[in-house]
Image 1 (cartoon, rainbow, N blue to C red):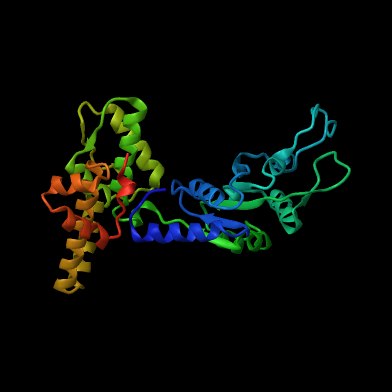
Image 2: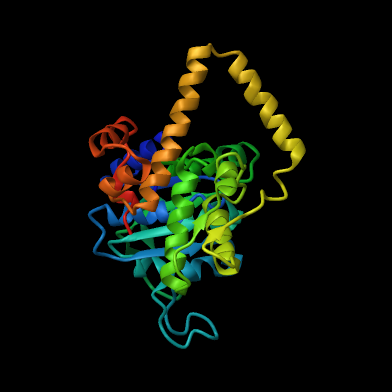
Length: 323
């Protein structure tokens, strides 16, 4: 997990707090915002870190196999059951069971999950008695579960069971300044993975990163960096603005931006622009210097002490830029 924006740092603090409790967790957020990564951070930051983290995509489980997948079965429970299957809950014993895309569960599957959450007792198919589980439940959803519950699509009582601890992940477009940081990180990962040398983004590409909507969020950014790294014929990567970021959309954005400046005092608008410039400049310098503050200060022609004060001013940590 990497970022410097205020909204990201606040999310990180909440993740740390949630990790130290045992209650079920609901993580909501758009596709590609890193819900499973956050779920893993909660698990490995908790007292259960030495035990299994078992992820499951609810949308990939056929309705008739929900109980079998979760609870397992005994040999002979049905025709093809030639051996015992412990089930996912048993595999996650003392650890964490992560249910991704929980909004895709059918009504029958929701009842099954609700019944288990009430007392963490379950019975494998074909077993004569119940078994007790000791697992922490973390679920994730791309959709707004409250809205689905109000529409009657998702059980309200199940929502109350899983939403004891709640985390809403911010989309990438709200994490100003983090896009360039993440993009450079992915390029470094590509350099190590594919061995084609270090490559950097062209200034014209950097210019639109924070203004693009990023509907696929971090996953879209990672895929874009991987593709462009492999296709680039030189060490400088120039990426045209995505097709969805049309001229008309840019004009609308510019009009809104102009209005916001007009409605802001001159000094406040000037302060905002300077802040944005300084943050982007610091990120670029630290990225090129791989987190070496002295080298970064030298690159931009500033004294190390003055450069360090700017980093402290914006709460920027050099370790995020180290290779």
